[in-house]
Amino acid sequence: MNEQVSTSQKTGVMPAGRSPADQKKLSWREKICYGFGDFGNGFMFDLGQAYLTKYWIDVCTIPAVAVAGIFAFTKLFDAFMDAIAGSMIDERKNIGRRGKFRPVMMISAVILAVLTVLTFTMPAISTGGKIIFAYGAYMAWGLVYSFTNIPYASLASVMTRDVNERSQLATTRQVGSIGAQLLTGIAFVPILLQFTNPHHGFFVASAIMAVIGVISFAICYFNTKEHVPVQRNTNAEKKAGFADYLKVVFTNKPLICIVLMTLFTISAMNTNMQMMIFFCQYNLGNLSLQPIVNGIMMGCAVLGSLLIPKLVNRFGKKKTAVAGLVIGCIANLLNFLIPTNLYTFVILVTIGYTALAIPNGITWAFVSDVIDYSEWHSGIRKEGITYAAFNFSRKIAQAIAAIVSSGILALTGYVANAVQSQETLTGIKAAMTLYPGIALGIAAILIAFFYGLSDKQYEKIAGDLSNGLWEKGRIG
Image (cartoon, rainbow, N blue to C red; front, side, top):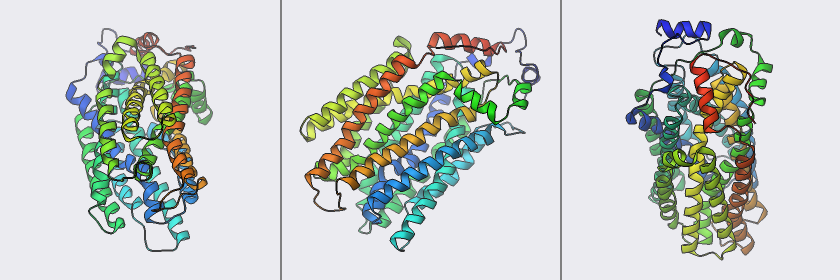
């Protein structure tokens, strides 16, 4: 680390005359390679959200109500582990030339790949034993996922503070995420169908996806850098204890708003992902339609995500996010009200998912902004713990999605691999469309009326931080 950065870290003041590195323009190579991190993330994370419910219920014959319990408990466990992971990452000492976040991300990604395959493996034991195994494997997976995803997400906050550059990083990340959903969505089921034993099919498919995931994280690791010379208020941070960390989170009004919004957007998205395979098999009557529907829906979502920089540049992050949420809400509600038809379903689910992809992408720029707001507001910079608070809401949202998906299957009398009752078909459709419609409507209200950190206000914050200023800022 050069002498100027060391001085700023000690004094909290940027040396006079220095051109702030945090405003530099990133190369498109680096932006795209950053997006490969979430591409790799998707090849491991999205498998669990989209296919574990099907694997555990239909292949491992675990009761649906027990599967709902597994997801709900493990996601709550993961949510609390995020805070521990974030704190441990924040307290890292003796940071080398590879930076604070990338080494933790890369090592954890390799371990996560192994655990991804383990979650799609089940020994031939009793039902009770299978439930215990599923709990253990998925809890271990969630713990390691925290040490993979938190440093990856925090990395963006130290790559640049430029508003437009951050929107482009959010775009590449969202394209990477949806791109992974697209490829896993169209490839996973065809791989399964190549095997007469479904256990073998799930194992091979998950292993292939896990290898791609590690390679993608490696591309991110070797081709990104932590450019921002973070000016840490070391005196304040040395004195910071658990109560101070709570203060950092709960006095950050923009963060709290993003946390609440995420409960609804991520639970909507995950419910959609989990129920798609059931909807295609039973409501549409053909499991082979699943990769086709996913290909159309997620392919359009990738294209929509590419529009994020232009939309943000013209309308700002907040207005763009609200518009996407409102469109997604309307499309999903119409899809529930209109009688089930392949063509109308595909059109509306594609509109709804593409509209949701845009605010979900912008969320990553929101998170980087609220990390900087936290430092500006409190004088303590804690990327890991701030992101962990945000990620806590994602885990709770995933638990909600699991309860909605598996819970509705259990309540409506779902029977694996059988002709379903009309009540069950209606329940699957409601989980697939009605719940996301309501959830996105609530998320739109939260952002429209309660998120007070505008792009203009953030630019002032970024300028203050570049000049070593910490303030007791108040933003409504």
